[in-house]
Image (tube, rainbow, N blue to C red; front, side):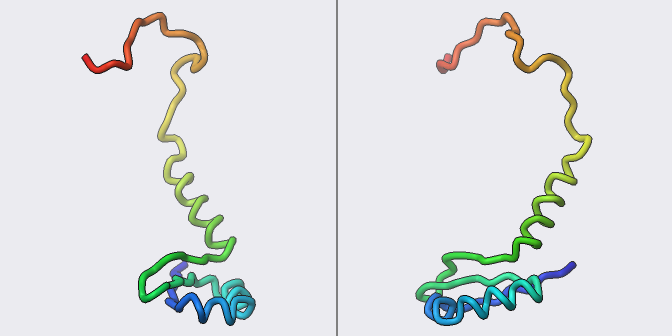
Length: 83
């Protein structure tokens, strides 16, 4: 699914916050909020966020493998100091 971004000033967001949130739920787009023409925040629907997280973890599926006990000591000496 393709999402579109809409950019609005912070004062417009403040004045129309509830309407903007309702629209966000319907169309799943994202809102970039600006302050003095500089982006300061992005508001996305919870559904879009869940889809993004799902796709990130989906990409990593079956890419890692646990080879041994992660808790047991490895009996090797090491130092965090620069040598």
